[in-house]
Length: 331
Image (cartoon, rainbow, N blue to C red; front, side, top):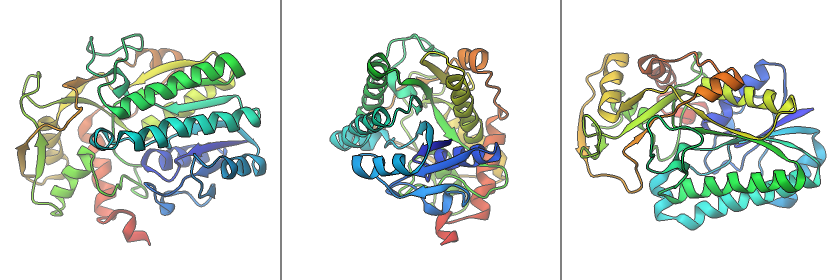
């Protein structure tokens, strides 16, 4: 039996593939390579360049491979882009989930772990955020992922497809050997942008907005190491394999860091005096997102290895130093 990793050529997906292979699992990767990198996929995994919305091509993968469970990372995830292009997000994310669930139903695959997001909560009513808190997205990205969660819930009711949604916040870092890491084009995530400035590839880091309702005026996020995140997805697969009911879990460190604090931590981690400037707010950005991950720790047994943001940045810096131009260095 194989685990199908959708979006397995992307940042988080490629780390998931490596962790599954480390455990001796058979892994099948589906990715359309619009955002991902073929070089990021471990050679031991079977790879199919397929778009999740292409029902015929996706069905052929299920026909060829003995799929036991699905892990879904194949969603667009950039908040400002979703505000500018909402229909693109509902097409890829929400409509893509319709196609996936149809194919899973056709081939009697009953388990899916879904890479969801804290953006489903919008501006939270409580800090830290609990799974039972209201979900009121304030951008199309969060809305699309909330719709995907609801679709899985109805598929569970109708077809007994069990699911786990893992709602997490900002992901950072890289596998410790520096062989794979974060590489988006264009880059929009905070840590790799800070490290581009540290590497001299940009003159400074722009911090978007200093008038948020936070102690230092910069928005606050919870950061999770990418390998800890992949391990949580593996624990969720184990949870479903044991016959447990569908569930949702937050993943986070329960500690928030502002953008300004992240820049300061990166200066310490890299030893580089990174220049930072304040820019205008970005649309759709909440003030604070910090997770209460008690349920993930107690129910799934999740124990993150990286709980210090400086250590997380060090692993990202290791990848950056070894591959200054990302996967372009490996072509």
